[in-house]
Length: 156
Image (cartoon, rainbow, N blue to C red; front, side):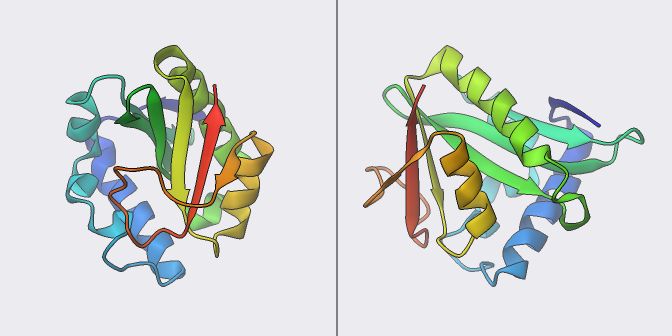
């Protein structure tokens, strides 16, 4: 398995993984990534932004197993975005590998990394804590996902 930048051929696979993951937790609702307009074309979305990148993790057959991105949030704050792993590939340490790549990129462009999530996503929240993210009491100004109820930030 290896991590590479997203390519056009990966868009449909990542859209499917993200939507399936959100449906699993009944989070296929407005105010989540499920309804993000860029979801069907992550390659173009990240290419048009400054200091942004999206990566996918693929197996030896080049099947997409998951992905994660960093995008601008505000000032010197980047945002960890759309970290999702295909159900049958969870538990293999892929999220940790994606986090390392994403945070290394974020350090080159930002002083802090922010993320928004849901309290019910216990495994994800534990991952964020393990990587040194601190939980906030409320979202930072400028949040697009009003349904989220848990927010983290990390100094880079």
